Length: 107
Image 1: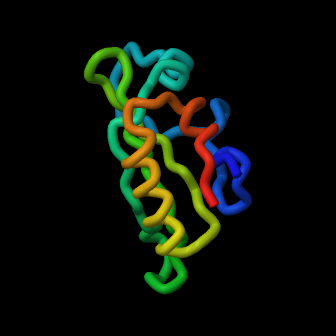
Image 2: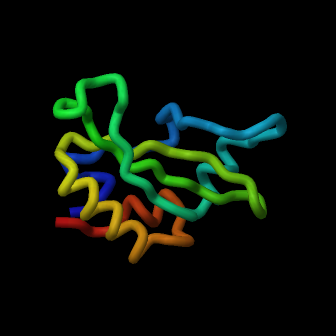
């Protein structure tokens, strides 16, 4: 099943409110369309008790030479799924666009 269609993944479509750590002059549409995966990190929401906190994967995307933005990939499953998906992203998706990442098959 493709990542963008997986029931345990809330895919970061273009309308998703990305967490942007960037400065003035940011072209959101250009960054989303042309950005490529630089890194992926499993993170846990700190606003919950540790045993109840949801996991997500923070996609660190590179665009326009060395600029970056971050797109959270929200998950509805535990740490094992998050770790497996993060490993898949790091092994198979570095340098790919969000569109291409969404097309990657996962179990």
